[in-house]
Image (cartoon, rainbow, N blue to C red; front, side):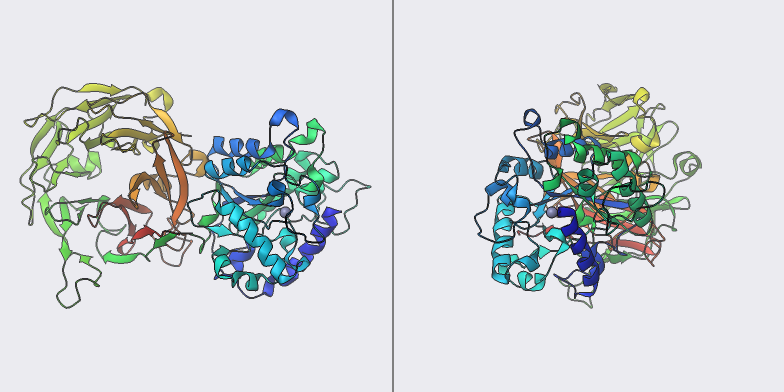
Length: 634
Ligand SMILES: [Zn+2]
């Protein structure tokens, strides 16, 4: 019965595609068939949150689904129906799904979903299509559900609506209510609303399928196995996903998917596992805020050009930012030919200094490097570190005999290179500078053949290396460039001491610093940046970095599918917690074919403006771009 209602509404919905855009989103964004989202993105959604808490020893589909997703680091959005939690205080006719599971679900389950970092969104309180309610009832209904959702304390400032059965009549009037104006959507689905059967997996004889359509509930209702449903989901994800991002509709349970048959009881969990196991390699399971226009309370300025130099085709190696003049803002340097060239900020006299967007450049050579091995053996690598404590960052370079330093004169050059740390065993892919013992001097942290060593800076030179961590061994693959290049020494938990973090194939590990130059045993803090989520792609991996956004330390990365993501540190749980897009995919893509503008693939996250916050500096074909990011209160 339910399937017939859904099928009919699917048709209504298909006819309604020409309805004017709602809540400032384009039709493509609303209906999910978005040309604005990159092929290969999967936006999972689970609707209804209907449960039978008394079954299966207190286990819930929802709990199993979030545990499964967390084991992969995948994102999901849960469109919640409030009457399953609080019964039916609205006396509305025609309520269907709420007849079962009414008020049975503890709010703690929804809270658990939100606390696990998944977005809980609005699917109406009564699970009635909007055309089935008078306008004022619809407003009351959606408002009551949104208040329930707001009580979960989610921090993205992102409020989404999906109409039951995609029946979104009067949705514009709904959105004109001041307190509902921040609702975005309605979110439709590309895959999961219905499937056209094919001859590979034909509908068995005797099964009613008049409209040729049905979602997960239809497969369940007709007693078809998980693999049967999974085949159709994977087929359509693969087809649509090759053209644009796909919003996938699944259910934690619907009314027809309830039942006491334990062998089928976890159908939704098994179906999700089937999809995860069978979608082709290369798909990224992204959160809904990856869809342009859905950034919630993030405010990101459009990336603006800060230099026409040091673009992806200019010079060698990576852009490095540092306080080489001792000013508040960082200057930017890059290797070109046999020199380290740097650009200082230009203060334009002709513009109002406050409103003007400052630009860098032109570059000049701050130090010619005569060692031919510098480019040949070390890829023209260098670091900017204040080695002599004069407030200006100095030039540190690799060489066969160890690190060398040239001191900044604060104006236009680094002094001739001289030995800094004599050690011919250093692996320059993983040499970092950080004050690990809180004495104000930059120490050297170096991964060498599976052991992380610390060289304490004693003010006159460096002490003998001390083994500081053995938790990133060669045997676990950490000798691979993909992982070694992600080593960072930053204060992850806010105790003022530098911590050690590195990405592995599935996890990002953190070894907390003991403030004396050693690191505690490394533990997994997140799985969001896994190879499975395409961080095995060198260009995407390159952008992975520690960052500080709106005062919060965390991990950031640009995705080849567009957009920049950030996951903030939560020291209370020893995890990186809230994961979100901080720039949508209009702002960055490492895929040169995605946008008309050919971008370079690199982003450097750095405190460019010297205000304590990291900004993404994008290295594009025609120069460097920067943007400001802040989080609004709402
Ligand atoms: Zn529903």
